[in-house]
Amino acid sequence: MTALLSMESLTGGYGEADILQTVSLSVAQDEIVVIVGPNGAGKSTAMKSVFGLLTIRGGKILFDGDDITGWAPNRIVQRGICYVPQVDNIFREMSIQENLEMGGFLKTGDLTAAYDRVYELFPDLKERRKTLAGSLSGGQRQMVAMGRALMLDPKLLLLDEPTAGLSPKYMEQIFQICRDVRDTGVAILLVEQHAKQALAFADRGYVLAAGKNRHEGTGADLLADREVAEMFLGG
Amino acid sequence: MNLFELLNFYVVPGIVLGSIYALGAVGITLIFAILRYAHLAHGDMATLGAFIALAVVTSLGVSPYVALPIAILGTAAVAVGIDKVFYEHLRERPKIVTVMASLGIALMIRAVVQVVWGVDTQTYTRGIVRPEDYFGIRIRDREIYTILAMVALVGVLHVFLTRSKWGKAMRAMSDNPNLALLSGIDNKKVVMLTWVIAGGLCAASGFFLGINTELKSMMGWHMLLPMFAAAILGGVGRVEGAVLGGLIVGIAEELSVLVIPSEYKAAMAFAILLFMLLVRPTGLLKGKVL
Image (cartoon, rainbow over all chains, first blue to last red; front, side, top):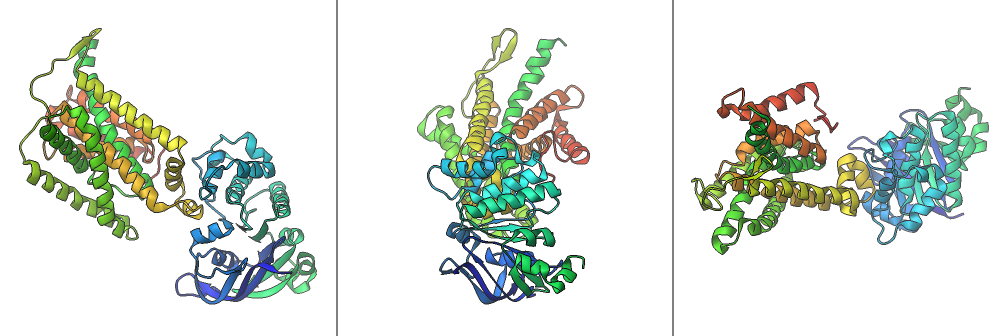
């Protein structure tokens, strides 16, 4: 299995402090990989490091044959990684369609094929494409946010806590959409607070604690691990 | 006083003045929304636009309306230039630094206007224009042109912002700057576009103030407060709000003469500004909170 993304003993953080210490992880072409861990473990930081949003002091990040360590976010977007932040991830005062159009901003030429692809994944959005994104429910906003990120046909999608604050029903729906997205050939790396559900649905998982790798394995293996269970899953 | 007197002496002049304010307020609101600071040189930029038009009229001997597009382009270029030379270097600093810098720019522009064109009052054309009578409403041609030009310019801007790719990029940058950057929208181009639009509208505002009254080096500075009042009244970041706010401030100023001495007309704008900031800082159309 060749990795699409591989992070090799990465050390770095915001400003002076190193939040991540020699963190390594990888994502293959057709995989959903989840990062779980207690609060302050550096989950979101690990993800943001892929997108060039923090200062890296050691290690490197390889993506699809390129060393992308230290690249600026707009260059990374063009290379095929799109990122969905946890909060403020939509343009509230623009319609669903306009949100998608902004997602495809860097694309030259016709966006029709990209719209069709996104609307096929999110049929609910197609019916309401003229609606202002800010007036949608939490789950639908998350769909708009993911749709926006998919407009550039990325090879890898980064999702920062996509189910935060959503009802169990929507959580299940978002997970199902993630599987559908993966089946179209897009790898997904996501950070999740709901460790149990996320490990059950992901292909593989990493457990981070205090900015370091703690455990890794398939979702099922991690769920079965006693130490992991005691750590996060309420014993 | 009958209805026609009220309309002819207060409401019509109020709408004309309001249209002039609206042209400036739209630029102020766009700069607030995209660059996130109060641009205090806006009035003096309008003065510059008015005098560029005067220069074209006197040197080429053309009608002021022919000079207007040239003044719009010239002032837009100056606005972009000022941003590149001054404001761009302050982008990462606290916004108050840029606000203060813009006050300095205001004084510089005014000084240039005074050196080049002098401090005396000037006009585009000589002579008195009598208003025409339309079913009892008395209005001058230049007043009609002022209102129509405002509606046309703001209409074109509206279509640009809602239909074109770069117009939408401007709205995206105003809505959520981080996400706009994550989407690969070029911030520098959006900023440049903002100055082209704000500068051009400034010139139109100064020009129409000049053609309806006269040209003075302080003309734009005196419009600054009403223009800000209009932008905040309408809701910061709302183009249609700035137009509504401009018209309300203009009409309120003209009507205020009925109860207070006309020298204190400008206090109306100040009162509206203060009232809105205290009572409803998001403005009539729910803009951003400052």
